[in-house]
Length: 67
Image (tube, rainbow, N blue to C red; front, side, top):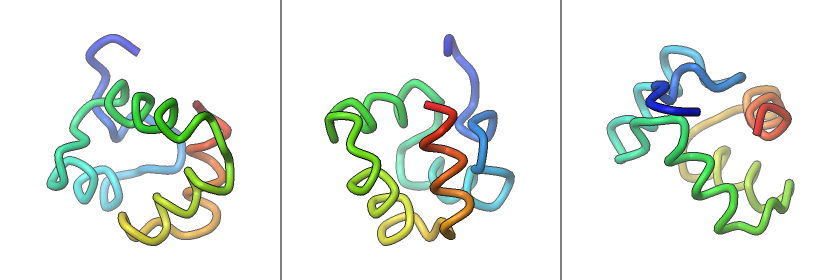
């Protein structure tokens, strides 16, 4: 992951990427860290992206698949 921006994750795009950046998730590895905190649980991760970050079902599915 290195220093890739959060927008480089599948499913994030410009709008969701900016939303994540504004909330402190500025790099892809930071989102990966949260994914690991949630113990790689698909339902929890997708719920987190949808409810607290405004992602739609496709975005959350794509991002989960990427990680």
